[in-house]
Image 1 (spheres, one colour):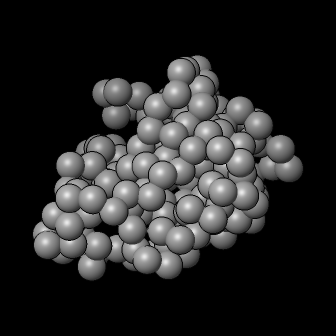
Image 2 (image 1 turned 30 degrees about the horizontal axis):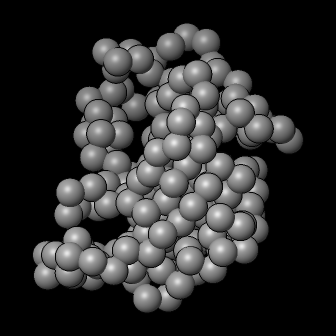
Length: 176
């Protein structure tokens, strides 16, 4: 699907508050159902829909999107009836570029997951540089690692925040 069609479909979903199945390139093609909230020529941000619930937000580079299909089906009807669509809101995240995205998330003081091809890092922003972000991360036992992690913007597949996993796990990790 052409990038212009992807942007048009995402934009239509934003205006109509419709769900969109977004297909991503990477380890084979896979998709996630979103309620798109923001889109520009480089990025989109959406609320993740999972089994008739919202499960946080994800920001992805548009270059990774292969298709965006508008979903106006029974799942949307159920989400409307269950109040999922009415609970949508758009976090104040500037999606103009990675630096702006990470500044916005740092200002929100949220833990996040930064997804790369090799690993998903969960933690907090320590610093934002011209071409990378530096994170303080915790492991699967909730232990903060001594060393920070430097992630190049070009290696980022997606950034997630506000998910049940991140928010609940974060309650049991000592604050930085």
